[in-house]
Length: 274
Image 1 (cartoon, rainbow, N blue to C red):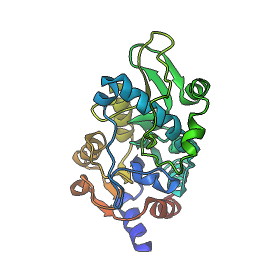
Image 2 (image 1 turned 180 degrees about the vertical axis):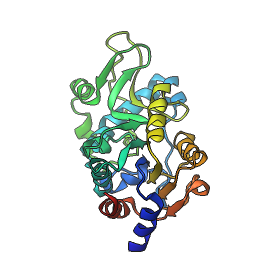
Image 3 (image 1 turned 60 degrees about the horizontal axis):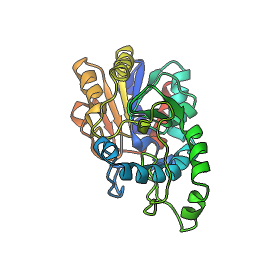
Image 4 (image 1 turned 120 degrees about the horizontal axis):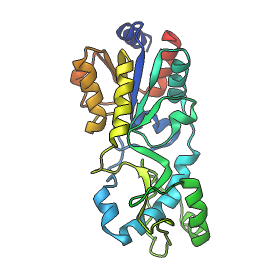
């Protein structure tokens, strides 16, 4: 490990860094991911699935009614705290995250761009109505008073990375529509097949432009939403350091690739350069 930290410190030098984070930074906090070594096969939610069928949405919201609680209870780990410390020292300009778990914010980091949204917000697909997941939960608990206890009584619940619990018995779950216009309510999460808003992408590129180097932490860079920032940094001549278990789509653009655990590497790095 010491030699790896020396290599990273050398690659970064005195530059200010923007972090690009993925699911691998949050697995030590108990949030599963899709693509790390030994991760079980999972099918991410698509926007077409969600919008196509009331029955599918009922099934999804029943599962989310349980799964979001697991994500809400998760706490930042050493990797999140290390990035927050780097920011306080002036070495980190901000974080571009592909995660929806809010753990960077819980760790005290600011200038966080949530590329794929956030589990803690809910929006109407037809109008501008918004609410928090906590407030929606209170309404759903009134409509489904015994649902959580009934499902919990059947044993352990598996939770997916997007706060979706694996539950099959959901036919009696009652969901609500938008109270303002009757439209479809959806977690403020970017599903597969959706694009991040232009404003969100602009904010992310602004952070990239303000930094002199990119630190990728816990992302396989499989989807273009994250890979584009690595490609742009490479075109701009900025060092790209990748800390991730397993190969990534950005390895060819990396100044340095470290195949290791974020929660072990980032605290050591923070102590070395802040």
